[in-house]
Image (cartoon, rainbow, N blue to C red; front, side, top):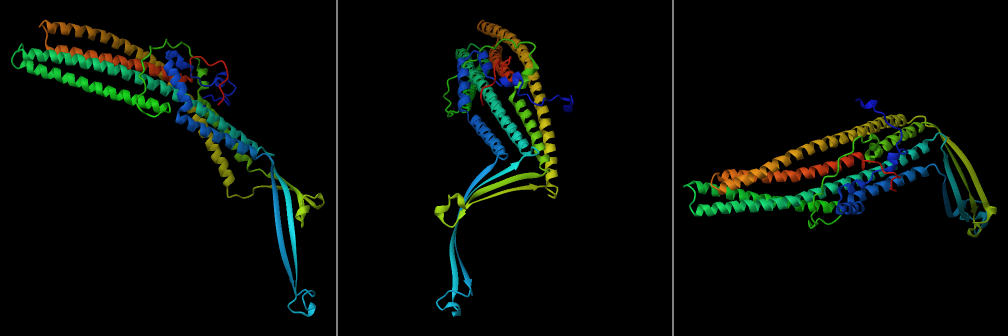
Length: 458
């Protein structure tokens, strides 16, 4: 589909789904109260969210600054001046009168001024108003960026929690596998020492069994490292010191099936899409601001106050003065700067439109990918479950045959290794299915149904 053919709304702020905003109620679908508490903690303490909040405050203050340009400004000025003036050659004064060549007549006087002044640019063409609207839209985009960061942090907490839970179960599985392989190696060693195998055969089997036991030990240590690393990563997301001492989690069951017929309107609450829409709206206002900069500017200036030579009379209205002035400025020649600025704003508007369209396409793509992965991961899990069941039966039969002397050790070791690998894959697939469900909620901007009420205050 051509991006130019995408239908882009002028504003989604009045849409029910957009007003509802991103929610984190989807976390409760995993029925894990500890995970819910961790998400709430991260939303309060995560440092990335604090950075986004600071940027939002900056954008809001910029909107206030832009709004101040359309309001009158008032200044109060106090000035004091003491001056001496000499009248050289003036024909009076001096000790010898006018005939005294060194005679100099001088005058010393004070001057005090207290002047309040008001300046106001009349926004006849809406240039200032366009700038205010643009700054407001940019602040709204920054607020959506915070919502996007909150949704991302919630998803990261959930994914890391599931990784931590899988790592814990992988450590338990690796510990169990190490014990099984060590038990097999001990049995082979006992048989070797009693000389119950043919010459040369038992030594090779013993080394093979001991190698598998050492490999299982290394796998357990690797799983333990992953467990501690996941704990530290989760602590950083929570805003805690990464001590690696976080209590381990447990993989929850896979939530129920995704309901059929999810409405595409759910994507209209995605904060990244809403932020892109607000930036597109801001770019249009910036373009209007640049085009109106070519029009004349009318400013009014008024001042009143008192001027006197005696400081005590400064507040006496008898010495009052006032002034009222107006001026019109029409840009005539700026070297093409203003027109070039307007063209830049045209390009920025095109860029913002393309970014909005790309955000919409990305949103649909993410939903489609996660829905497809939901099905494929379920099929993989079913196949792995069947393979694991068969491997468990093969392992039991191989150990029984080996104990009865009708099978060799290689078959036993192969069956044990395959069973451990498949059980490990089961855990990984379970975690992947949980993560994919998290990604689906992130792609939809929340739960499978929009929240009924308006979004919480930013």
